[in-house]
Length: 90
Image 1 (tube, rainbow, N blue to C red):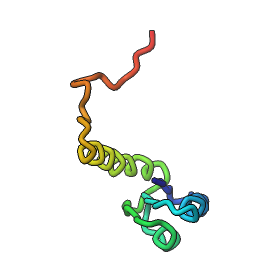
Image 2 (image 1 turned 30 degrees about the horizontal axis):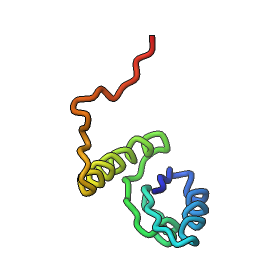
Image 3 (image 1 turned 30 degrees about the vertical axis):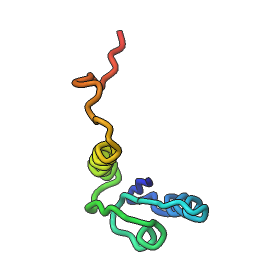
């Protein structure tokens, strides 16, 4: 899984090629780009935005993907139930 910001596509394509040359499947999340489309196995397209907003937009498909993958594998995504997912430091 690769998250490509609007200015990071060149670096991300290099990482995608390292993974795919070893036979792995690469999923990229980013704005529509011919380089990502050509090198990644799948591309989840984000709307055009600034680099600061792109990282926030990428969180949404990542959260949904992790939720549905855990459900498909038979894991309860809310286990232990109502667990506070924050860290409090005194």
